[in-house]
Structure formats: C-alpha cells, structure tokens
Image (cartoon, rainbow, N blue to C red; front, side):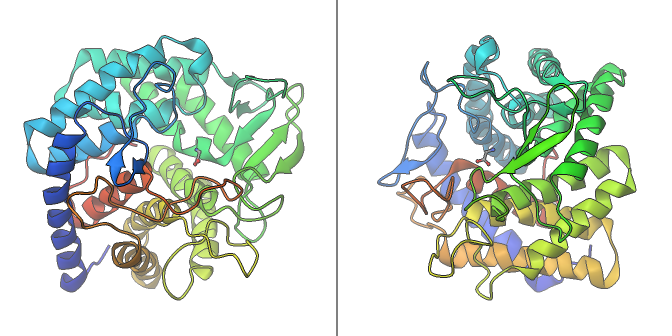
Length: 377
Ligand code: GLY
C-alpha cells in the first residue's frame, strides 16, 4: 500500500486528536460499557439484562487499541473491566450466539495477544467452542437463538463473516483444524448464498436446516428483500478479506474484491454512506458505521493488491474516513461520542446517532493507515 505523506499526516493528526479526546472520555466512562450516547453522555450496557448485547466487545477493543498506541494504564484498566463484566454473558448459554467473535476478539483475544493473559485465552477458547457448536454440518453457522415464536433454526447472516476469525484464532492457538474447517465451511456457504451477481450481498438467508438448501433471503436491517444494506456490504467486504488473510483461499479475495468494487461504485459524491444503497431516492439516512467498517476492509485490500487497484481501494477508504471526520463527527471534548451519524437499521424509529462500533472501526482504520493497529481479527 502506497499512502502519500499528505494522507499519512492527516491520519496521524486525526488519530492524535482522537486520542486526546478519548483520554477524557475514557476517564468519564471508566465504569461503563457504552453502546450510544444520550445528550452526549455514554449509556451503559453492563447491567444484568444488557450484558449480552452484541456490541459489548467494542468499547474494550477501542481501549486496547488506544492502550497499544499510548501505553496509558487507564485504557488497559477499562478494557480489563469490560472483559471481566462479559463473564456474566459467557456463562449464560441462551445469550450466546454467532456474535461471540464481536464480543471476545476485541476483548479477550486482544488482551491475550498483547499481554499473554491465560484467563483471557480461556475465555476466548470457551467463546470459540460455543461458536463452533452453532455449526450445522449441512454447511452454516446458525445466527440467532429462538427467543419468541419465530423459528430461527435455519437463519444465517452476512455479519457472521466477521466472527469467523475467532475460529481461525482458536485453530491456530490449539493447533487443531476443527475450528478452521467450521469457519471455511460457513464462508463457502456465505459465498454461495449471500453474494449476488453484481457484488452486493444479502443480509439474512433462510437455509433448510435439514439439507442446507437456500430457501430465501430476508431484508433484515436494510430497506427490504433484494436491497443493499450498507453495513451488511461492509461486513461481507471486510469479512471475506479476513477469511482470505487466514486461509489464503483466493476465492475469498476475489469475493471481497467483488463486494468492494460494488461498494465503491455506489459511494456518493460527498463520501457519506446511506443506510441502504437501494433506499428510496427521497430518503437520506446515513450510516457512518458502514463507512468505517468498509474503510477497514478496503485498507486491508489495498495492502493485498498492487498498483492502480490498490490505489482505488485506499482512496475510497480515505474519502469515506475524511467525510466522517468532516460531517459525522464530534470534536467536542465534553461529548462522549466520536461518530455522530450512525444507524442501526433502516426501519428503526431513530436514525443518525452515535454507535460505539462506529467509533471502534474509525479508530481501527486510522491505526491501519498509521501502522499502529493491534490486529485483533
Ligand atoms: N451485527 C448486527 C449489525 O450489524 O447491526
């Protein structure tokens, strides 16, 4: 990847300013596991009822990245506290699902990689064991549990591509290919059932849990069936890139590049990413989490490719990251959030608010550009 000095300086200066703000935010939010902000103040998902919320690993991940950058103890303490609080979730079978990777890669695996902590290794292996236990041998990792009358036995989602690195990590750690084969089997199914001819992806696919045949796709968090939920595109883009990094199977790299090329072709002139690339023309909901996640995937692709193609990926990432910093960001040090215009799902009542994984991936992307990243996936 060939980043010029102007862009590198932008990334370095932005990261320095972010860290200066985050030192204050981290002191204020030290006892919390934030998801969003209310009037600029972090909420807290660490209570008994919400400890299983799927985003609860990202605050710890953000803290580990900033600890790696600065060595400041506060970040490490916050990350360790988050990880310990997550034990309540790890011990509650019904609350565990495909999102184990999102919870324990940025916390326990990050901790283990940085410090060699054996308790963290144990947590991450338990989470990986549970994730691989969700594998249906007809070819997919089941997404959610049944918490109401809806039968989710055959549901798989594109987001799960980002959880596979927990399985790749466990295989390497235990020198046991079982986890690896589960991950690869799911990735192959995802390649077949989720990625469409034009490089866009489905969010949810309903699979027959008896024979592995695809029954239908479901609109999920996007506009509708056949639409193009941008965060789902980002999970696919980054997720297939990561599967390539762990397996060296070029079909995953080709898949990631197809999604990336589709994504780039749809980036609006102003660099801000809509919630769904196929949302109605008179709707302008933005989701900056999709932009931050896609940027991480594109920077990895820029490292894996050469010449003009590498430049296209890097420039697209820079365009989105600069647009976030310009139009979707709070530099106010009295406010707890970084990104401001994030959206969880198209059909939700609220749009364009702060979401912690937007902050996490924005910082991860900057640290990829500056070469400071702790690689956790
Ligand atoms: N993994 C759920 C989401 O992206 O909202």
